Amino acid sequence: MSFYRSFAEINLENLKHNVKNLYSFSKKKIFAVVKADAYGHNAVLVSKYLQELDFIESFCVATPLEGKELRENGIFKDILILGGVLKEEIEILNRYNLIPVISDFNQLEIARKLKNRKIHLKFDTGMRRLGFYLENVDKMKSLLKEFEIEGVLTHLSSADTDREYTINQIKEFKEILNLLDAGPKYIHVQNSAGVVYECDFCNVIRVGLAMYGEKPFEGYPIELKQVMSVKSKIISIKDIKTGDRVSYNGSFVAKKPMKVAIVPFGYADGLPRSLSNRWFFLVNGKEAPILGKITMDMTIVDVSEIENINIGDEVVIIGESGNKRITFGDIANITGTISYEIMCGISKRVIRCEKC
Picture 1: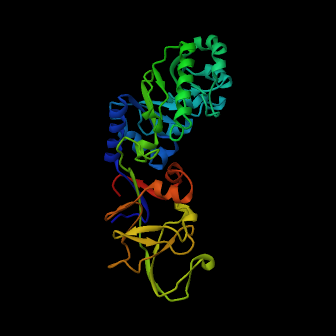
Picture 2: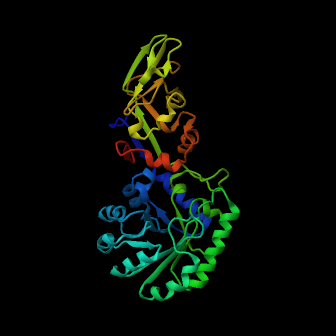
Picture 3: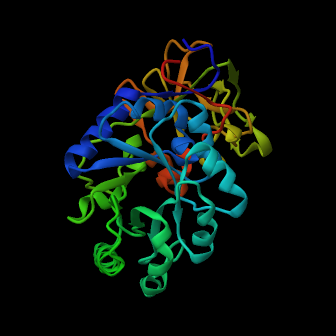
């Protein structure tokens, strides 16, 4: 039993399984997306493991500070800053040898202060977030002569839901590449959902979600294993009577005598409060329904039908217990969001460890 009250086990063998399958399917090396603390999986732990694999080409983060953290913890492969660069961040990029993704003319001007002048260029083909437009190419050409254009990319906004739109994005990007005529080392378009699309002119894939074991859409053809399991333990067991009100505001009222367990995992740990009275944890391979409102630090569950229940027993919030399983996608579906949000929402208080 773990020393920690609540913890997230990171299965690095499953991570390796996923990236190997993505590599085998795409036949392209990988830019591993480890932004947002590797989608909540611990970016340092994940990156240290992945950088030993030959087919992991580079790492992608959102901000220079995320890149700085990786460098200070021994990550030696290239680190790409997907969120571009502000003028006050140039010093960090130069000091830690971080490569910015440049997406507008203002950033291009700032990038002139880079020591190595190495950049990636991002084009907006349909996301309407960051990126140059196709019509900017002519104006850009003369400005690019002083840079090493290591990579060119776009972001597929709807690869999981809209095939026609995605194909059109890829076509527009190919037109941009032909006009740009920059000869980049890396051309990256395909994200986790996008690896199923043909892109013969792309030579690396840029993946995040699928690395961590979540399929971006139903019918995804690549076999994946869940990397993170979130667990806690029972800290108290008590009996309640018929008519007892449970948790804040009494949103659950017992209709019969019940046995309940208190689990030290609440919304401050990343459990959506909207799961109150309509979800469950797993205890000893059985479902333990949530009773009443989820609180900041604790959740009350019904263990009346679970035999041999004891203080200290393991509670699975996300993961497997017996023959039952809860995924990030399961929680996302019932709360009306996406699995990314649930992953990233598991708070820092929940200790990440390979073997807890």
